[in-house]
Length: 59
Image (cartoon, rainbow, N blue to C red; front, side, top):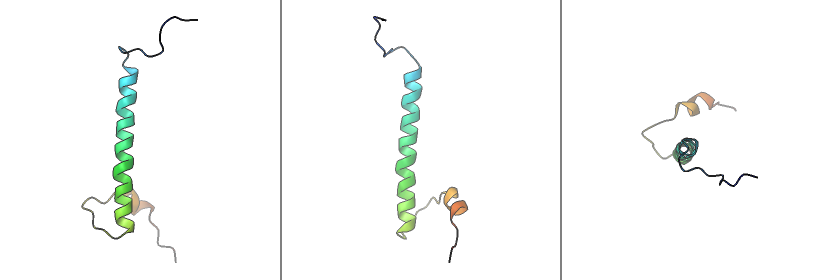
């Protein structure tokens, strides 16, 4: 077995992983807030383009 620890503080891979996780977390927070505001009728200044593409009028 290797005597080295699994975590390498000098590795760039964990920094890239951290940045990706922060971006995904912020996207989930702001995306869920935008969806919540749209569903509840609150006005938002930024309307996500994905919602206008996905939204379908089904009667």
